[in-house]
Image 1 (cartoon, rainbow, N blue to C red):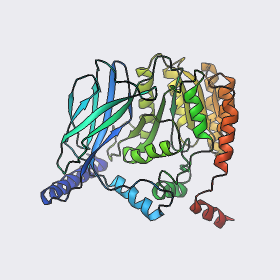
Image 2: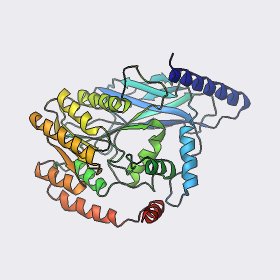
Image 3: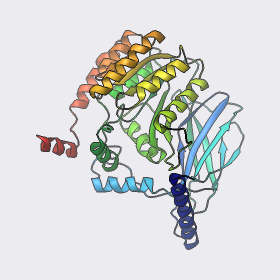
Image 4: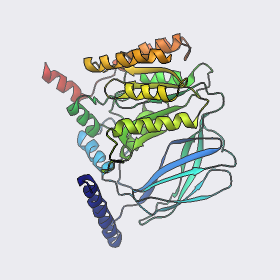
Length: 388
């Protein structure tokens, strides 16, 4: 047994003992169900969520202090999951499906519905999830709804996007700045990249005017950050979509898995393209990590399925060279990978290739200028002043 395996087992045993002690002493916080946005087809729905104790994480506010944000982040990672919680899932077709949470408090279920519930905003089908029993105080409101995305038949294409340094400014290539962003900001004080919200809204709109092109967000961030990421998308009016995150486990999935980041993203994207065999996709990422290499592998595994690839340039020369090399390779596959300096550059290409209306370009430009006029985070300004 490896050191990581031993450490993981010790952590799990300690969590179990602490949970049992709190249960006996009546010190457990109220239990709540956190439903995740997921996806499916008219014939199969994938429902996922987690049962945790309520740690009192407050709604984000721009005036929240960094200490307050740090405390909320600690609460997210100090999650007390509820294994063995019993739930029932109702997809709206008159059927009920029992499910029990695993040792990390997760529940997952694949359902073959008799019929779909009416869609909300063209794409989303609500599935009721009711908590029946858990080892802790139950909430008054035990039923919640898990939104499941089902692309309609007239969707033009899907969009698969990274989050860190593609949508959200996290400075993943600068460890100190990344740590401050992740730990000390909330959903309101984190900044999106300039113009990204309007560009994504234009992609969702496409050229049929229905806003029914589905978005999927694939990230190596842990599930503990789900609420923060979901709030960030909503507050910045970025199209919602399933957040396909990772379990924050100490154990490696296998001895041969040398790149969990690469493996996680590739697996999730493979699943999406296999789930929707008739739907082409646009892929969006950044040059800071492995997105270009991952997307090259997607193109090779699924020929003819990728319409375009946009890679945001994080201004690291060695990464720029790597992306340019991959882009040159993909010319043989008849797929264009574009290294873009900003969202306007991407929107211009999307308009030229017929993915969006030409009117999308000035709309993205206007939002980019508006975003550039938004005051920076005071901590960032102070740091930049200190460097001068």
